[in-house]
Image 1 (cartoon, rainbow, N blue to C red):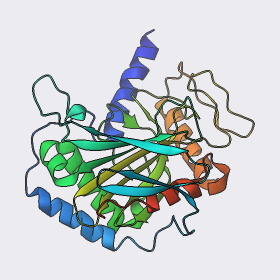
Image 2: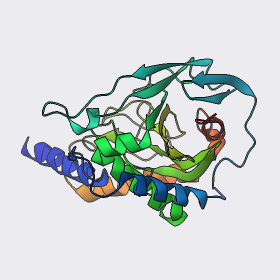
Image 3: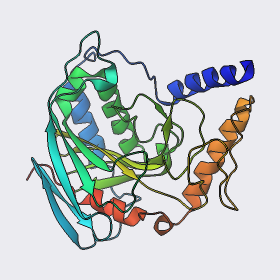
Length: 296
């Protein structure tokens, strides 16, 4: 059992590094939060032209939420519901990922994929307030600024920045691209999160977007399940991918380089796949993001 435990510990350490630190302090960041937001907006302004979203948005269903709206492309989902979530302040019993101001969660109904690990959702936060409460969010805005201003940096498990309410780290970051929505910009990628080395699979894979509105008020995080050709259907370490897929090294492996090579190979495979071979297609997911408007 010792080799397995050693592997798990190494994995946790590696993912903590990939996620830029899973255990973040919850004190407000040093410096002026508004400066971070302004710098991110400046980077967003120069993000165009983008790699994604070159196609016009397809016809779909209009959806609204408090303070905004978007269009659900035909076939992606049947509708959406929203709820306003009360603020959760920092205290000694609250982990950093649970701290947040009042925000809105939009859940997609009748989504094209069912029974996946993640629920399809778009979360809208007040950017400055969230960054002032939670240092991990201030870090995310800095990273978002850097990534938008340097499109050549759009690769790896740190793109886009870490999901602020996940207590786990990103294993991969594939198909990364900058996207402009109706009144802002951000970064999307395909990713999977875990607290240990795990196979990339069609139960846990999701389309991840983070962006900021042009007025600096709204910080947007989208999590939308997606499946890809040549990935195993489930997350078990013994799951076998289809012919042509990349086999997982297995939970008994103790050579860390095997996992490094595995995640690199899966990322390369996903990057090489056509956007329309994913389910839902990346074209439709990008179109949804492009249609978001948060300041009408």
